[in-house]
Amino acid sequence: MNSIAVPLFYCSILLLGMSMYLFLSEKYKAALLFLVFGALVLSVFSALLDPFLNLWDERFHALVAKNMVHHPLMPTLYDDPVVQMPYDRWDRYHIWLHKQPLFLWQISLFFKIFGAGDFVLRIPNIIQNTLMVVLIYRIGKITINERVGIISGFLFVTSHYVLELVAGRQALDHNDVAFLFYITCSIWSFLEYLKSGNRYWILVTGLFSGCAVLCKWLAGLLVYFIWVIYLLLARPATRRHYVDLLISIVVAALVVLPWQFLIIRWYPAEALFAYQYNALHFNHIIEGHGGDKWYYFSSLSTLYGNLVPWLIVPGIYFIKKEMKDKKLLLALFVVMPVFIYAFFTLAKTKMLSYPFIVSPVFYIAAGSLLNTSILKFSRINVPAFFLKTITFLFLATIAWYDMDFELLRRDHAISSNGDSYSRIMVENKKIFSALRLQLPANSIIFNVKGRHYIECMFYSGFPAYNFIPSEEQYGAVKNANRRIAIFADNIGTLPLYLARDPSVIILHPLIRGFE
Image (tube, rainbow, N blue to C red; front, side, top):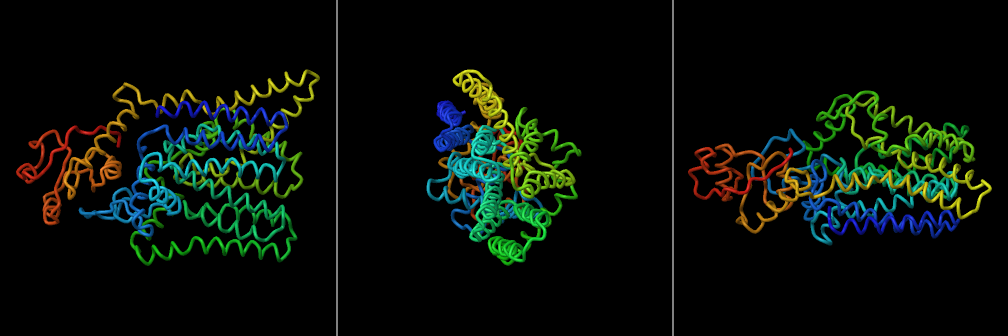
């Protein structure tokens, strides 16, 4: 854990505590302001937790975004693909279309401005996570009231799972942060449209929904499922209502389709592979990410902590009493989450974050229940100071257990234990970074353990592979006038065609790793 991180954590606690104090004093605008600043500082704390690229998706996203600085419309994993490999795995090819590009463009923009690095990589997460508090507040205020909006935003920002997403530790890290952000933006703008009747918001809804699709894929159109259900419940809806829906969908399509046309034209084989791979997720277990029919329900405590899951259903019941628009209540708080959980439960491939796109709704439900409880508690005939103190301690306790700071500190500690995850990742980063100065400019690195060739490329700037080159590959590298550097115990452990070549560079020390 970065030494700067801990003071930032306690600073965020002070800001969030002040927010709740102002909330209980009914100074809601000031409470929201402190809540946003607290969310910002807490997000920066999260982004500083790991001074290295995390396994799986974060390192891939970082490398592709770094390469896209120089060519935004050509996402590459291997920017300099000296050794040709078949396009049969998303983790080792030249053109990388495994994810839609918007969140990568965001990262790439900050790399362009500040340079590529672990913390810079997470700046978009910081910004979007902070803005999520404002979005949840506004959704809560529109659907119920301002108090619920503030409590719901407070519950969201103190979520342990959210902090781990911002830190890049939870799959799919930056991708899921951006995806959740743009889906929430689309729902917020749709609610603004319902509230004001201003048709400007249908364009904004289309823009944000299209951005969500450009982060992950078609689940980004979730707002239109809510919209259609709302119109069906509101029957007879007027022709104008359906025209507005169609206009918004057209705007979303105008955001999404140009990239699809571009990759089909420029990278047809890679695009076809990516589309087919995405389609497999529903009917096949991809890369071992399976689970039984209770997978997402048993993981509620991982996503929301030990308390919030118990508040969701009763919270929706209390929303029913407070929310005037019953059609919106059914569409947003009942049908939509039921549909999302049913859909992802039926899908064969399962990952924790898939249903997390409904989290704003769940936090608002929990916030509604807490708000009702606080208001009822405030009617007890005891001194006001005592009531405020007890309520403040109650909210602080929920937030503390929800964040689980001790777990954060333990999981992210760079301990003296040489076998700990963080220690090994830090040591590998030092080895890879040093190669930038140690190796000739025309070098290619081989035999990097597991998938750590991705971090190796990010930190060193050289092409890297996790295998010993075959004699044919060796010949191709030599013909390209490239220098071979290889991780090995000694020259005697290598094939003769490498052992007899005095230009081959043996790299020490050997890195350690996980996959």
